[in-house]
Length: 500
View 1: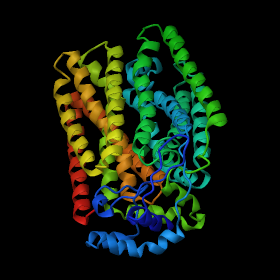
View 2: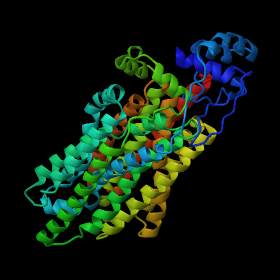
View 3: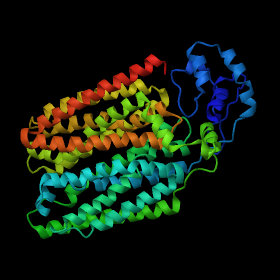
View 4: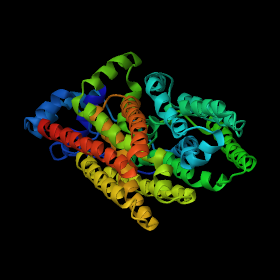
């Protein structure tokens, strides 16, 4: 109740004309605004209101009526001291490099799958599972990890996750041997556990450390760290492990790659323990100030999950997000096979094409975050990006076999810009639809859907490619992107009908 009532006071009391400079060294509060003017661009962090007052707004009640009803609230819930700290960017950077390290190890096998298949003498499905184990591990572990995030805090989760990442990387250093596939799979499994401690963090970290005009951008930067790791995972393995018929030479290069990964993961683990902080001394926003004062027994994790499962627009978003991101996971995992089919012996260029997808996606993610912070047009932006993702996927599918690598690079960049740019949009839209539920819980359900569809699409597309070729496999993904687009449109229609 306190969150809702304070927001009524902040957004409705037109007598309050306070304005503070948004500066690194000064405390600041949100400036009041007209609730009727802003009702179509409300955000969960600074414009939340009680259900009763929502009803008044949507039914056309006057501002004066609302001011009278919030007069007592103004006395009970005064503005609290808030502050933005410069070190919030340090916390975000640490999380980004941790996420980057883990994402690199996800793709270090897949992008040179033909080399590892020959080295370990296994089929394509075995190599694909070195990627898909990340998806499979996430599904059963996300709910307990989300509970841990809500009950033990951000730092505890980041420390444990970076520890798993470090341990898994060191396990793989002993696996540069044709007989050690089982051990390298176990090491990859341990690294995959760390992923569960990563994917729900960006929105939570943004809320705890950043001001209301920065949260979408901060969330996008958090996702960006993961994308940088994927980009490095596309780029470096083909360079560090060149295609060779000499097994000893291959083992030597693999060992170098594994030790580099382990060294970086160890340094990051130490930095996380020493430098990373749970939250700032003073909250960055009024919403966070009130959240800190909420008694712990008012929050029920089980009840929160049940409320989310009964939130129809959110559940539609969960499925449509899973379809989009699951397609991206399948493309990333199978990219080497798709490129080699049409352009033999182009492992290095396959990595560069993957790099192009991710770098363009990083630009898309950042621009989408900045756009959301500026406009708050969650419904329109999400739908537009989904449409462009489908169009890009169709064009990419039909130009892959033209025999011109430059065309593949261009279309891969366009595809990455929109498909990867959708990642932070989904996170932010979900939090908008579900506030005041925990950001970690909503993000966790989104990612659970993405991992599930990632497994289904990777296995299915791999089988289709083996039997009918790359074009058929990509058309398969386009069909499901079309289904996701329809569901995104239905989500927006429901929100528009309800006046949200």
